[in-house]
Image (cartoon, rainbow over all chains, first blue to last red):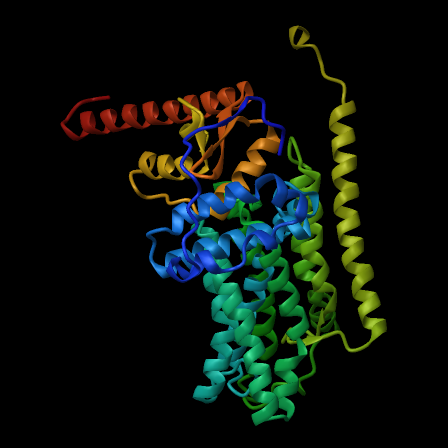
Length: 353
Length: 103
């Protein structure tokens, strides 16, 4: 913060009253000042502590704890340079909506997979599987809805539920049912945890929740989900002649190629979002970097049309990485060429037309 | 928050109270949210620290709008005013048509 421009005055001479620790509300007894970086604490620690003390003085316990949590988050953002005033924080804030769009889009695919294949990890074959499937997919879809309505805090809370739920399911299946089902749940845990972490570290006040921003997120999620869901249906719906045959049908090379390439579809959607952002009148480079960051986790995802397993080996991962970086690079290059073209294009004087 | 600082410099707790009053009780700023926003507005040059004082042994900094902050708030007010005027005009037009007018 900048230096004060006015005088420092000392008003009311009443000495500071320090209540006995036992009489202070619980939130006021939780550590707070120590959470802040030393420099910030020296400059603003007293003031923040004072305002916090006033706010929690007569507040209910829940309100006090929420106040403390918000300040603790503020302190941690300053410590990790992830506030909306820091470049890294602004990149994270640019990434978060598109991380959510991708996660919600894939959740829609997995939800559909559950309907089509009751015995799959997201399947509805029995109540346990149905609950496990819903716990993994539902929160992301609801989070998208909340973000669309401008309720970012609720969206973040739902993503926490979804991420922790997924972790709990993996642990539960590891102990109770450590067979193929566990392996299938476990497959994308790192991917989902990365998405959840990227979304949670983003400073909420830096996320674009304007009408345009919210529409962009919703459109990106739809653009990710609809083609992948269509492909899943095309691949999975049994043929009338062989209703039990899902896996051993011979598909045309075109459809197989399409299916293989569809693993890059989410990254292609995010690259398009990047292109549109960079093509805007005044693009924010840090936000653009955030959109590119949101595309990177998709390098691990393969095996469409189920989209539930990570890359099989390092060769496949390298291939995916090259494709995703190529898409992002292509979008950036296209935006730069377009910008140069419009800037250097001769404009006819209005009077001569 | 800019509106809360438009008429006079205010310290953190007073800003929370003022935002609550301006929003008719709908917006209750958390202290963490307040300081996150203050950090950003200071960095953007929309507000500055007006003065510091110690009250009951507690440090209070009061914030005020800068010229840039005043200008941004003015532009936003104009934008909202134009929106309200347009809404009024269309509502009046709608009422006219509803009562058999030929607008």
